[in-house]
Amino acid sequence: MINEIKKTFDDAVNKIKKDVVPAIKNDYFPKVREGLDQAYDKTMEAVDGIKENAARNASFSVSDLSRDEFMLRGRFASNGYDWWWHSFTGHDKETGEEKSFFVEYFTVNPALAEDLPVLGQDPENQEMGKKPSYVMVKCGAWGPNAKQLHRYFPWKDVRIIPNAPFSLEAEDCYCSEGRIAGSVNISEEEAKLHPEWMCDAGTMKWNLSVDKKIPFNVGYGASKPLRMSEAFEMFWHAEGMKTEYTGMVEYDGREYIVRADDSFGYADKNWGSDFTSPWVWLSSNNLTSKKTGKRLLNSVFDIGGGSPGIGGFELQNKLLGAMFYEGTEMEFNFTKVWTEPKTRFECKETEDEVSWHIELQNAAYVMLVNVKCKKSDMLLINYEAPDGIKMHNRLWNGGNGEGIVKLFRKVGDGKELIDELYAKNIGCEWGEYDI
Image (cartoon, rainbow, N blue to C red):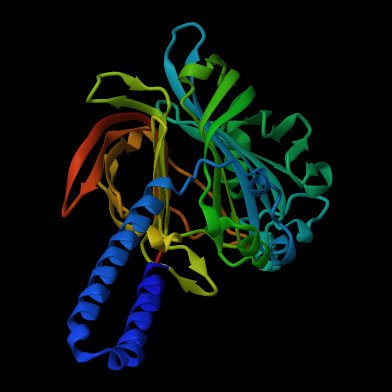
């Protein structure tokens, strides 16, 4: 947009020089030229102001429940997935011990439904060339005794209200904008007999109210025209990058209380025909300011992406990032080119931990993020793609990351520090496809 403004102005200036200047007496030409140069300089100052204002004021914290709707229509109905993710922190009712949990409602290929769930990792289904088709309720916890548990339903046993406000129900499992509930119980014997379930053994039950406080609306990248055209292979919307959960969780015989003020909750959704590789995600609203020494009660950051696919091509090393800093919005969105977004990231896996080093910029701000999470606190989380192939076999997923976030304001050719934040309870993900 900025380049178009500059070109239009340049074309106008050149037209004046060509058509008007020759008609003016020679002794007036220097003044005309001087006036044109001054006008050009003032216009470029205005253009710079437009760029900075766009970077500062383009709001991402706009709720849009239509992006939380059920998306498996068109070609996605037979080659697509759609999921609603929730993560939060609870405390042991007896000991007060903190524990981080996740619950996800995952759907795939409704147009290929059969009377029983069709599991893509089942050898018989693979031999027959069957693609997966089911609704899966995924849940679990991070930290000590970390695990993921899966419960599968055939489509005929699932009730969905597809349009906003969305809801999904299958027996005692339920998901809506304001509530999640359900249970999964997998025995040791079942987990061993059914590797196609891609899960561990254990039990979890939950009943929670959901209050989504701050969204991350990525804008045009998940807008209605792109959703209808199913342009991207993987879409993202975080209706509740800061979410307050209230209720209870039972996990392997222990009861946990989830409170709104320290649930440090998160809620988003992804949908499409394939996943991204590399896969990057970081988010936290448990942030403490180094400047004041106090926890920030109205702040959250969220970063996601990798190499999204569109039209058979991959957009390499693209991230979507947002920082809501006590009411001030800083967005780093590769689809909003007028804000001059720039991204650099490096993710590493060592023997004991996974680390993320990310630098995000726009015309007005710089955000530096350094996060680590112990592998002992994480899971190798399992998903199969709609085509039945499981490419992500080393996708690290956690909820107990810790790190530092530095925020800068651009000033001239330099930058000044706004604040340095200590982040805990960071939701984090990193993985690449098997080669």
